[in-house]
Length: 196
Image 1 (cartoon, helix red, strand yellow):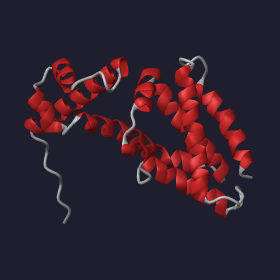
Image 2 (tube, rainbow, N blue to C red; image 1 turned 30 degrees about the vertical axis):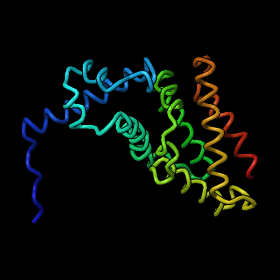
Image 3 (cartoon, helix red, strand yellow; image 1 turned 90 degrees about the vertical axis):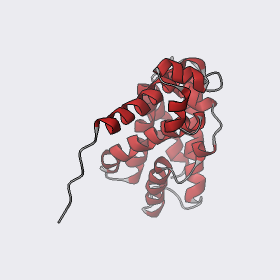
Image 4 (cartoon, rainbow, N blue to C red; image 1 turned 90 degrees about the horizontal axis):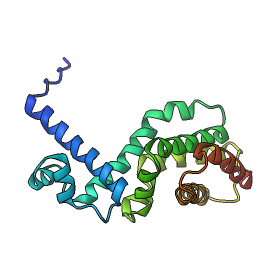
């Protein structure tokens, strides 16, 4: 017999709302002022909770960043069926990077600027869902002959990530003066030709 989950108590609902409020407030402040400039006290005050409440939900300001990176991984998890619905690995790779560009475009220039400034170890954690999905797509491209086998999958993944980060960095430096999705579509197609 399958047990139905118990309904959430009002206390549990309030806790979720408070945690989400802290995350949204922290994101807004970090986007506006930068990660290094925002303190836990700033976040707590703007969210209307005590510093103690902040520490109840997050161990440190770094935990806020972890949550922000989890959001992009969740975004890829939700959109994986659409990305993988394309017939060949080359098309799936293009779609992967289109979703990456769309995520950052929707989050905005300030958010992307904030994320790029942070040098956190989980930024490059290859066990993150986004990296796992990209590796699967590129592995498939190598195995099906879309890409040459002159390079390892890891080298190809690294190269595409380098190109994508460079595009994001350029988009931020240029203050969003061009359509990131259009630029990604063009540059990823050029990059794919290197490995054919």
